[in-house]
Length: 122
Image (tube, rainbow, N blue to C red):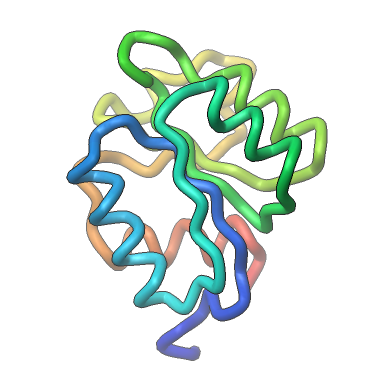
């Protein structure tokens, strides 16, 4: 297995906590991502989805009190694989999304790597 398994990948990271966002961006860069786009709000993420192409995404479930589910719907409509990120685990995700992977906070490098590789069938 490559030490940069996400080389060439374009990832959308939706996260409203700056320190967590910076941590995830650093991890993804270490994993070889070519492009990391970050959004902190539902509207910002939806605009990026309309403008850019992504290979995968990770979505914080709760963005300053607003759920990220409209982003999940937009990604699903475009066939972009995504996972949710939350401190609550799968319990924080509605039943209609239970097939989606959940990355539990706090993040560990290996968890981020493993989840994205599974998401992208690598």
